[in-house]
Amino acid sequence: MPLGILVPLVIAGIAGIAVLLHILGLSRPATLASEDAARTAWLDEFPDDPALRIVLSHDHTAALIETRDGHGIVWPMGADTTARYLTGARIERTTNGLRIDLPDYTAPRIRLRLAPDEAELWPHLMETPA
Image (cartoon, rainbow, N blue to C red; front, side, top):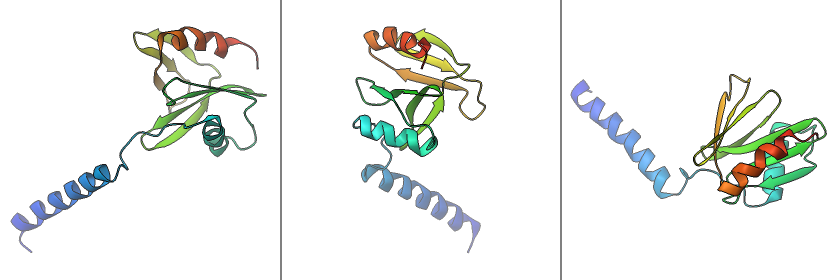
C-alpha cells in the first residue's frame, strides 16, 4: 500500500477510536460514588492496610484515607483511580484546592480541586496521627 494512503488511513483510524471512546463515555475521569468505592480503590492499591476512616471530597473526585499505617489519598488518574500514602508529603494550598508533593517518582505531584472549606480542613486532617 502506498505511504500516501497508509498514513491518512492510520491517522483516521486512531482518531476514530478516540472519538468512539469519548462518545461511549469511556474518557470521563473516574469518580468515587461512595465511601465504599473509595475503600475499594484504596484496597486495590494497598490490600493489607484497610481504611479506618474515609473523607470524600464534595465532588467525589478524591478521598482522604486514614489507616493504621498513616494517611493516604485516593484520586482519579484518567478513567481509573490510584492511591498513595501521604508519608513525607508537602501540602500547599492553591486557589482552587490543594497541591500535594510526594516523595514518589510515580506520582510526584497531586492537584486536588476542593471546595474552600475542604481545602482548609484537609491539611489538618492529614497532620493528625493515625
